[in-house]
Image 1 (cartoon, rainbow, N blue to C red):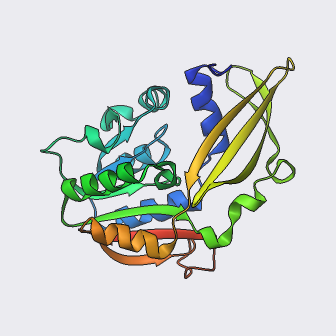
Image 2 (image 1 turned 135 degrees about the horizontal axis):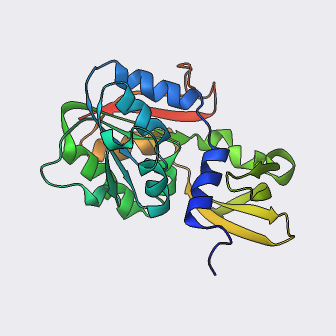
Length: 244
């Protein structure tokens, strides 16, 4: 059964739920350390950070598998400055070359198939220039953040640009080893309801380091928060910065 929301409404709801925040500041500052970089935003969504990178003077490519998200991104001011590609890392060509690759907004956790995860890291290494950097975020499983994803703590309401009103909340539960199932509940003004399930991978620091090493990527730092806190402090994150 399809969603009660159109592709455009889903993109608008994503934007309403995901505003510019400390993580965007972190990644933008990191990329700005090397002016005029060629940057790949892998899993770019509706282009919030992608377009900020372009405005900062970088040559940016945004890749995302969801056509509705890319349509919203292409409609934003300044979108013509970005190369948009529908797909995953497998859509990258043999001649593509980047100084930096980003996977933000916990995109890495959405790649739950381990073969696909390994392929993604291999594709990233292939398109990175020697010395090129990879940066991404993944929630630290030791922080057990999913235990705080409850209806009581996540309940919110939104009005979309077309006037659609809905209440939203989330619950979650361990799914399989290393995986957590997250269910988003949506209640519309007319009383209709829908659910959307997602499964996220929670890989620990040792696992991430090992996966990057196996892909030929060298870890420079793993941080626990957006202000540079060590792992185990800060925001309960595993913020990985690595290079080819």
